[in-house]
Every structure is written in structure tokens, then in C-alpha cells.
Image (tube, rainbow, N blue to C red; front, side, top):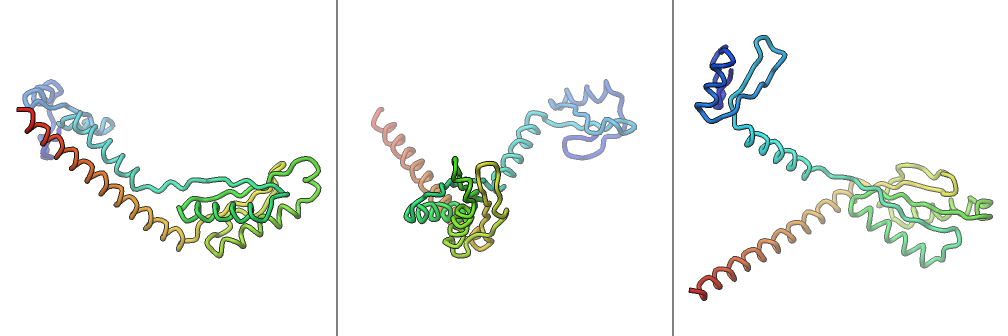
Length: 192
């Protein structure tokens, strides 16, 4: 048995270990059931679970989830629309997300896949080396797709920009919180 401070209390019978746990207002938790004899620990189980969930939440907060966003095009798209979609793809890449660029074919448009390839190459060329091709141009049913990923430099800049936005957001939240507290303090003074 191990105490709540981490010191070893030795091998104890189960009833004595439970009595010790009740005396200290703690829980007896079996840590290693397969060991001979089984290892138990005295701890506040509710607090232990709370700390565990807090650590998991903290770990999740520092993880970057790369989203896959999709931009769809048609073979008969106009030049201005291509430029607009290219800017949209560039923005997604700057935010650190991967982008799936798809050309959707209908009916007889399938007879001219070279138009779709040219369109996808045009979008990639318009990104000015802000992207790397993760998956080359390929036909998937009636769609011709290409997956783009942000280049390290672009991802780094996006991360710094996002951190700056979050810092600004946190500062704004803190200012709002302080303003509310001052307002509540002022309201409490006026009521008496």
C-alpha cells in the first residue's frame, strides 16, 4: 500500500487498508492489480479524476487539428471566379488547413479531362509557392481532385498569426471581465 504522500506503508490486509483509508477520508484505489501482492494507493479519487481530465483537456488544447477543406470548381468556370477560388484556397492554406481542390464534371464534360487538369494546374500556379501538392491530380468518379498542404513557412506564419489573434481575443475577454466586475462593484455600492 502507498500513502497519499507517496511513502510505502508496506503489505497490509485488505480490511486494515480500508480502515486506514476511512480514517484519512481518502479512497483506496488498486493501482496494479496483476502484481503479487496487488498494489493499492490512498488518494482522493474525485480530485484524481478531475486532475486527469484537466491534463487531457490541456493536451488537446495544444494539439493542432489539420482540417481538410474543399473548394469545388466546374470546367466552364470564368477567369474571375478562378481567381476568387484561388484566393480562397490561399487563405485556407495560410490558416494551416489542407485543401482539396475538386473539378466537378457533368455529362459530356467528362470527355475533356484535360480542361480539369489545366484548371487545377492554374489554381496551383496562382498560389505562388504557398502550397505543396500532397496528392497529385487524380480522377475520382466524376470529380478530378488534388490535395494541397501548406508549406512549412506558410504554416509557421499562420500559427504566429493565430496566436496573435488568440492573444488579442484573450486580452479583450479579460478587459470585458474587468469591466463587468467594476460595473457590479459600482452597482453594489449604489444599492445600500
